[in-house]
Structures are given as C-alpha cells and as structure tokens.
Image (cartoon, rainbow, N blue to C red; front, side, top):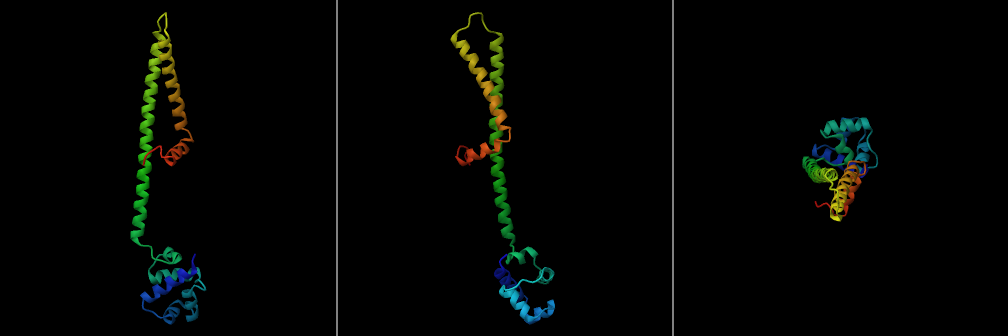
Length: 170
C-alpha cells in the first residue's frame, strides 16, 4: 500500500465534499492533526475508521486501499481483455481438437486398411505390399502415440511450446 497515494486520495475525497480538515475531524471524532497526518501519508487511519470513511465518502474500501477510484471503464477494459484472451485460448483448443480428431480418423482408417491387408494377404507378397502394410501399421501406431501424448498432462506444455515458437498461429 502506498500511504502517500492513499493520503492524497483521502484529501481529494474531503475536498470533493467541500470540507475542512477540522470539519472532517469533528465528523470522525479525531483531531485535525490526525486528519492532516492521514492526508500527508504519515499515518493511516485504523481499519474501523477506514470503513467509516468509505461509508462517509461513498467509496469502496478497495478504492481507499488503492488510493484511486476504480472506474467502470477500467473494469470494462479488463473484462474485454479477459474475454479476448479466453476466445483466443478457446480458438487454439478448437484447432487442436480438430487436428486430433483428424489424426484419430486417419489412424483408424490406416488400422482398418492394415487389418484388411493382413487378412487378404496373397500367397506371394511383394516388396510394395510389405511396404504398404508396414506404413499403415506405422501410421496407426503413430496416431495412438500422438493421441496418448496429447491427452496426457504434457499436452498443455506442448501447446505452450508451439505457441512460443510460433508453430500455432494466432
């Protein structure tokens, strides 16, 4: 807490009410010198007095502790920023889910293709046939590994790394 800032804010609030330090001191049941110390930032009022001041000046306690008014526009800007960040995160999440679904479908198709080739294997196989069988099994296995990693606790770290290295566009 910045005592100087709080003191200046208390002074501004008093002046908005067009009161002297003596009048405020009388209202709060303290001396004029005490009010002066609050406003210069040498001392802070007790918590019970701060609550009374907040009621008297019709301000929030957070405003007194911050030493400034909390504007609705500031809150609106913060909310807008948070909404934009949430939308961005949701967009990245949707991209990743879409890619994972596509990879899963490709893996399933490759596995079905592998099983088909395995059961329909001709008596004499060629190098091309063995290559196709190996590739389809490799794709299937690869998709299982990628799916396992992306649904594990390490997925968020991978996504952060991709964003950091601009692999996932904004």
